[in-house]
Length: 219
Image 1 (cartoon, helix red, strand yellow):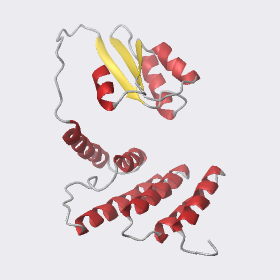
Image 2 (image 1 turned 135 degrees about the vertical axis):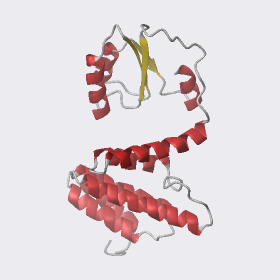
Image 3 (image 1 turned 90 degrees about the vertical axis):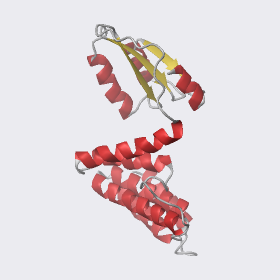
Image 4 (image 1 turned 30 degrees about the vertical axis):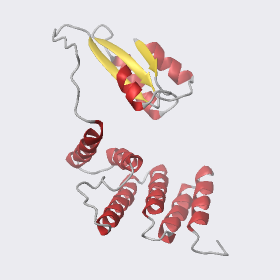
């Protein structure tokens, strides 16, 4: 950084180092410096640094600030897309789905009005629907109200993870006589939490090595 005070890569590496040290405030500052150093036209790098800044802010518990940073990234990406003459019908059109995932995750924990949070999820769902196509109804539709309800959980976090912790509570509280639960495991490695969830489920399917279409067939 002494040789090149505007080297975005150096700032990024420093941000990663301080994040691993648990010094999240310093990490956020370095990631912000990297963000400021990127040329505005380098949208991919701008979005990557934006996501890093927001992640560091989340680790500091500054959720609303993280959301604000991500929303800034969405606006910059939309402006860059429009500058190239490409239409932007949704704020999510111009960014990678992973960036949207980070935004929606942060939004869930923010102080934003619940309607605004819900509408953001619905907007992204509409974009996903355009990609995957219309819903295909099940071949067999048992309308018997007394039947056992089939419930499936698909996740790449069926291991030591906050998602698994939440799911464990749901599985323990369910009425096993009324629900038939199948968990679809997308994470590759198993751990003690994986085994715990498996014991609380009625069926378990490993689909980490399957393509999206193959996984869809399993579902």
